[in-house]
Length: 173
Image (cartoon, rainbow, N blue to C red; front, side, top):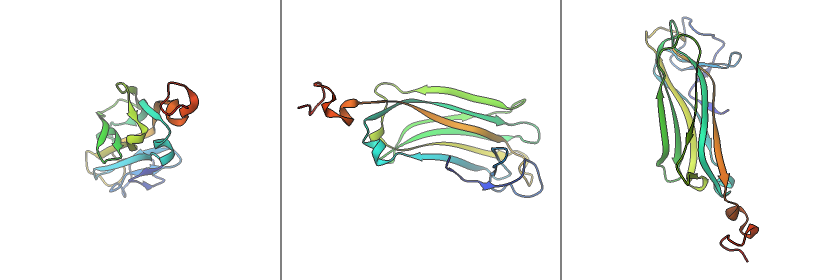
């Protein structure tokens, strides 16, 4: 994972210092938000090889756990974005993650309409969380996120990667 927008901490929440930047505890695998509204993001850049592979993204599966109650309460939202090579957004989805009574799993599948998103048009995709402690206390008293993932669903156009694979491919000789 290549996340950005946080600092590594040994805190397991609360405390009397920190919180101006989200904290990530490597032992517990949790991102914790503090008193400043901040965003953490995972961005995957499509390489030239993927862009020329004939891949079509047909959708994605998403999942994460979050905790937003009691001393760990505040504003929390999640976003998925597919950015085009021309700088536009090809697909965007957001969620407002309200208060919980315990750890809550948010998961599902987004399916694109045919033909999907061509990898050749995608610069990157990202999953981000924006959060803030609702009481503005020093430390990590805001919402907590863990086990976040986005998994792509895709197909390949075999003609794009191997024009000799079928007589119906353009360029077949």
